[in-house]
Length: 455
Image 1: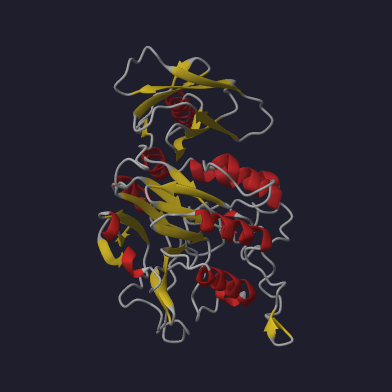
Image 2: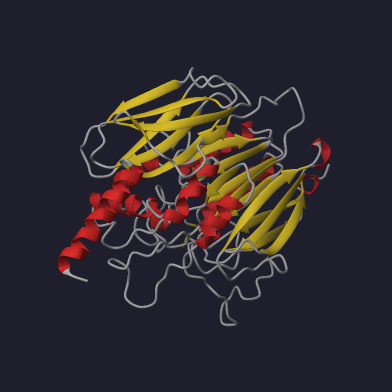
């Protein structure tokens, strides 16, 4: 093929993509959805000056649309926009459309969402389910380390999109900053923009609401802590590219809480306040009070928030593991002063229905910690989605982890679906794990009645 012909084909493809996207770089993504409010997120390229989202009840009069318009300030090359849609009707299915510079964008994904029903004090809690997973590595050969690709098949995201659930919960390491990324603010922004343009993610982000927390790789460097110099920029990007309802307090951290049906989700930040892993474990034979993972401010928030909860299941969600007594890696159990404080608080106040969710480990497992005077604590770890897999061997101290529920260890790319069903006095939690092709791998049921203190 001649050089001129190659150039002609390249130009044709470039303008064809441009014509198709019409300035839409990535999205749409559904963020949080509440009874009367929802968030829709998009990213646009530098050619767009004005962006509008129009929305209406799907069964209503389309001519009576509501709309929100944003004029764009071209201060950077990666422009993410969050549209908060207010004063919606409860339990209503809405349609929406994206208009960029006066032209409607053609979307190849669903453009629908449904607001929450007002069931509280009126009817039984509705059954619900969510998709959960962590560690989403997408290859970028220019900046990846030499050797075999660390990122695996992206088909898992398409499989996740096909699953039926109410929302997605992204459990950290939702992208992986490389060395060239976390050395500059523009590098951090590049990674978000690059990964969000991945075609396999498109349907997953659009089909249902998305909630997220971070771990080290989407916060900064590996095993990152409070010393990361670009932590403010990293937080700014996280809050701009995800769609949670709240993020931390007073500009610090990304911890938050949301409710779905009769379940509360306490999203923890295991990086912002974290001391270095290498800090000494004990002082004068006692756990070092200065070695923290969540920090005093966040733990105070968690205690207050969980005391307010009347949820059947209280999901405490962390990027890294919390309970694993034999883990040689990052885990709250190794930060014994905070670990003891949290466990004592939950027991002292007899907080029932607590289940821990975590990611990070590049393997999935369910841990069960039996306790003498109270109900057992469960921690479900789900990882990895598309990154490399960690396969335990007999040399690993965790190979025969006595706290692992038999059969729950998954050493391949996987995701989970967590469901809450049943009548008020018989609510139960079902955890199901699937491979990248939606093949069922494992499941386990936990009864709400088994997560209560004995009277």
